[in-house]
Length: 302
Image (cartoon, rainbow, N blue to C red; front, side):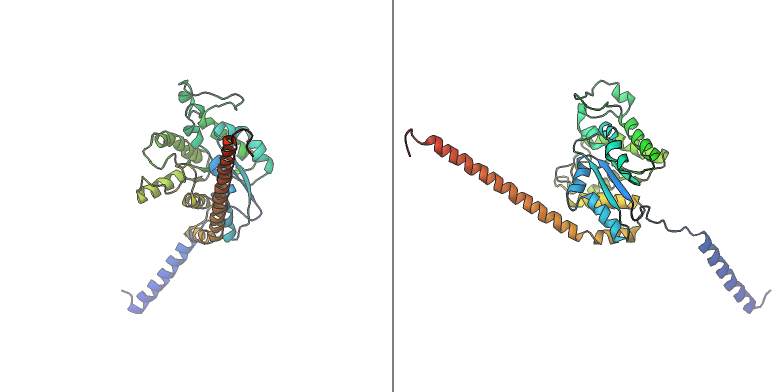
């Protein structure tokens, strides 16, 4: 048996070796994927359009959140209200690829479901049902699965790195028929992200988690109308996208701390818009009253 002093030294040496071994195999913390000077295209529908047009929309918050962590990126806004997967595929070259971004986030699915017969079928089996119609001049409808797959493939072929966003919600009642119809579309996105090795921001899962936790089905928590984002919805979307870009918890916290001025700008813009709307309504009412009074005057009256 070794003397106590030798046993003690052996323990110290063993501990030192174990620490060195652990240090050599411990995973290196992931870096933020987006680098300064790079461009990020944000392809989507009205949710994405609002994410850019509002000072505190999720697109603006993502760019500000990256900047707060030392990454200066440029946004390429590519959201158009009402657009579905077939329309996004048709304008991919013009609105995204021609701008030469390094990254592209894709937010698509709400309108494919929400538009009902004017939407886009999930797959060939659904397309064969004959329930979907096309409007004059609309891009070939195809199927959601094939359209999204083609968008990802074309982006990657052009050297653009895509990030998929699952579709958020259609009404904040998670049991609504619309949300039930949306779920298979989100399953397609999760599957494509895995198969094509594309980063995924599972926003739908985040929305469901928040709505279940709050549990106030009679109040709007994340949207203004059940679909389009309010301030909290934009923040939740931005956090999901930033995490998909590789930001850790501390970096996300730093991003969130930078959003205050943008939120103030958005609130001031909303107040100004409301005041302008009220003034326009008052002017219209006054003009109607004046016209009515003029029509009521007897003939020849001054």
